[in-house]
Image 1 (cartoon, helix red, strand yellow):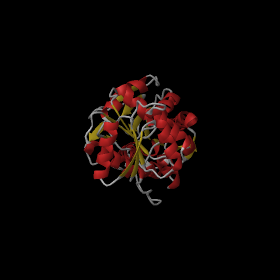
Image 2 (cartoon, one colour; image 1 turned 90 degrees about the vertical axis):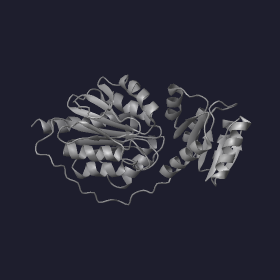
Image 3 (cartoon, one colour; image 1 turned 120 degrees about the vertical axis):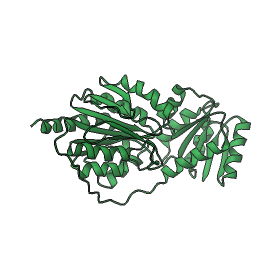
Image 4 (cartoon, one colour; image 1 turned 135 degrees about the horizontal axis):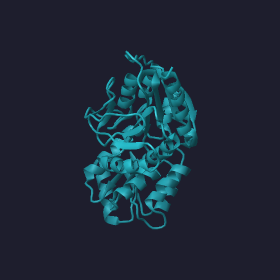
Length: 335
């Protein structure tokens, strides 16, 4: 793996360089974001490790500019002394794939980077034939909506939740890839965008119509058929992630059947694609964000490529599209 290190502190740059060399990777060191952006334009890098505070162009601007200007941008890991939750969320919103606060260990850096690369290089599933059946003895009392996002996801998710407005006859379940600290902070941020109550999920929580539930860090979130309670598990990561979207989507398909709606937003990797295929198999609706409007297009693009998407829409109308599907299903439920 060829890794570009953007770091103006010589000691930190040397530590990162040595750690990558010991792990068998090829590091290249530059001292500011502007030089890093120029090198990225030349191509040939698999990943970037960048500090935040640098001369000429800081690391956050580097990530943002690279996402906009570089074709097939590499993985971005922000490594910085800024450790507040606000700073970390700002980096993730800019398009960083992961974030590590100083002081760090060499093992932490290599593990984080290799995990990001595994997601980035995860092969696309061959067009699967998914057969699934929801064993519903009676109609559910509401619609189940499940949405996922990864790289660039916090900002995209905020826009979608804002566009949903109030869904009086639906429960909304969210998986945003990220660590516990980010998700705890993000719950409060989402609440500012929605008239519905937004909750960080807890084991055994009873779900209700008109509420939003966000999967917590390091736990898969499932909806239990029948009771519609939440179940949090420590089952192994799926698609290199925990929480992951696929377990949630499968559970929503089982719990709500044809009254399920799924959306896959911006993100690196393949999470959500097979779960979306399960939603489609039980007769639900699947909406993929138009990859051209995504910070990282591979998650929604995979859903499209395997034929699971009912519709593909730009981010700015995605919330309204979900709302329309919910309203149609509510009409059917009330017949």
